Amino acid sequence: MIEISSISYKAGKFSLKNISFNVEKGENLVILGPTGAGKTVLLEIIAGFREAKAGSIKIDGKEMARLPPDKRKVGIVYQDYLLFPHLNVYENIRYGLRGSGLSRSLIDSQVKEVAKQIGIENLLDRKTKRLSGGEQQRVALARTMILKPNVLLLDEPFSAVDPNTKEKLMREMLKTLVPRNIPVIYVTHDQTEALEMADRIAVMSEGAIVQLDTPDQVFNAPKSEFVANFVGIKNILKGQSRKENGTSVIEIGGAQVHSSTVLEGDVYVTIRPEDIILSKQRLESSARNSLKGKVGSISKKGPIIYVTADCGFELTASVTRQAFKELQITVGDYVFMTFKAPSVNAF
Amino acid sequence: MKRRAPDPILVLFSIVGALLVTFLALPLAATVLSENPSAIGLALGDPEVQSAIYTSFGAALIATVLSLGFGIPLAYVMARGRFRGKGIVQGIIDVPIVIPHTIAGVTLLVVFGRMGLFSSEMSALNLRFEDELLGIVIAMMFVSVSFVVNAARDGFEAVDERLENVARSLGATRTEAFLTVTLPLSLPAVVTGAVMAWARAVSEFGAVVIIAFFPKIIPTLIYEKNIHSGLAESMPIAALLIIICVGIFVAMRTLTAYWKRRNEEEEAAN
Image (cartoon, rainbow over all chains, first blue to last red; front, side):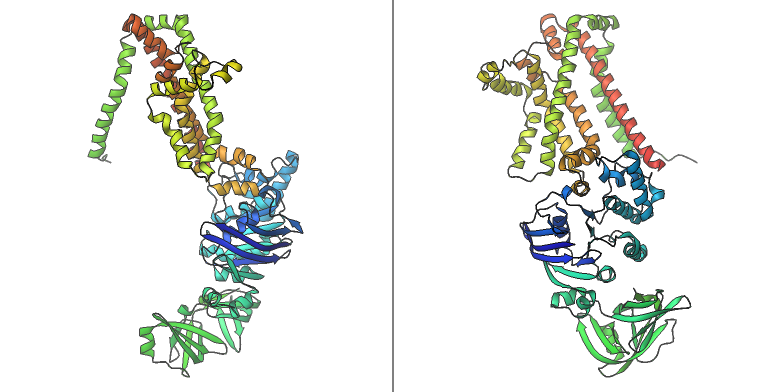
């Protein structure tokens, strides 16, 4: 368990103010915030690369705040992985055991074991330059995990991965790559990533934690306008998913939604407002979802107008001012909301 | 397939470049070629010349090793440190490149001479620089150490500081992180700096001759022969030094090119 209390830090104009939180063994805490909020600085303070002005960092009851990074047993994986370019994959993973006093054969078997766990045993004699982002990430993780750290810090682990493989990597990260027996602190600016990875979320803004809660609370009961605006994903829904013909049918409220993400059981669903087509008559189209609902509210934000209707659950669509004018919708009207199955993101 | 006509700008640049290369090579080639090979052989056999060659190359080597020993730590501080007066320190590092080298020699005498700032400490330690190998070494070091510091600093700066962070989180002390990550990654830059510094040291005359006329290095010997006996005596030695220096440099360039190519091939093979 890691206990962080009253950490403060200053560098030029930037400062961290009175940061406190605990992370239990096996818990994933996501630090969510916009660029410049101080997320990476906070990780570097926990790792010991920067020294906090005040505050305490306890890992398993032991005070770490004044120890150098090499004495902390805190593993860190940076967003650009930072593999040692002059060493190959095997040598990168072995780096932390250099000078451990272990025999060469013991080191060899440990490197191979961790490589196998993480699924990179076939990459061991490769140079690091030719690895894909996902492969580099695994090597960086193996290099850290071989030392069995007491805390794992992940700095925007998916920001350098292309969006198509991101989804798959996130799932693997949760299921197999990240150890279940230590606290994991995970930094991101991406709301859906946070929602997917977190047991709890700490929302950060301008060097302070503005809300620390379960994902449910953060997204559905934001405590401040900043959190509401920043996490502002509209259409975050909870539902029950079952497989059907290679896709999913998800029960949300009283309604059914088709998704191309195949999952079973309790799921979160997000649908981007701009992916929803709004119409007064039912549309004949290839889109799998078309729900009828009564307009409950209309809000204007610059050139975009959000129309929220009750389709058994609240669903918000965004339309341009021009389109809104032509549709002539008012509160209380019945509308159809049409969207394709791939637009329904479930996790 | 017909080959494309060469780009006119490339042709022009090649002609201008060829003129420059001729300007550099012609005096050297003329000196060497106009000399009777037997005279060069004779010069090589002369104990005075041999001793000057050893002194020149030996002192330059010692100066380079000292420059590395002091220059690498300074370069690391300059690359990683944030402190007041950094610009002034960098200015001081660059000074030897700017000032005329006879002036460098005079300033060294002011500090290390028999009547210099540390004369009492030096005599207590029985340390002498004037007309000693040590004097040649410090003169060479003074004019060449900037190359080591600047090249190494550029090399260290090019290594992401966060790589050191990662190494430290993997249990390495700052020293270990420097020795196992930063230094290996900046080795090509450090080696280039050392080669430049050594070359600069070998070619130094002005600073050396003011602090130590003896033991004679090759430039001093040539200067003396030229004053006393004219070109006939100085030219064979000059030709000899040109041959040796060009030989060493061509060998060094070939070696580093080979080193680089091998690294690239290794990468391509992966």
